[in-house]
Image (cartoon, rainbow, N blue to C red; front, side, top):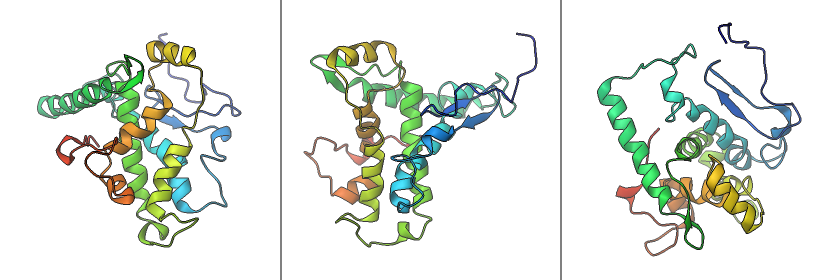
Length: 222
């Protein structure tokens, strides 16, 4: 309090599998522990790495422009740097995210809490988009050669899903829904991919499929 920001301080240990965006220091942090499979593998193809650690990096970058990060300027100060018109359009788009995630059923009649998870959901949607754009700038991103029967684009999206493979009891899931600002792992995959046009093309997702959203309803914030 009333002291300069300590920009050398870390809010995690190097051995913790996590990543974070610290808006007051205008920084994103990736400790050593997350720079290993399934997130990153130096011997893997680009599709797996961009869908893994690439998505995480894109996610943390997008936090700078989610509902919370957007309130900080480039110096880490809480300051409105938006035009009124831009911020109004941004709030309308984030409301779309809230409305969509509110429809996701987790258990019985328990739904994802769209308003509580808006920041993380925005970052997930943006993270996949950024990572995919970056992947398409690689040699493999321009190729169609299959590995293990899957195209590069399919492997990218499979990798996005692979990093969120989590198993938990229903009791813990109910606790998660009511207390965690992140959507449950399943919806950290399905939610963003439902809004990614390239996913539809990669797996030939058609109307009637459970993950199909009409193109006009797909959300693109960043």
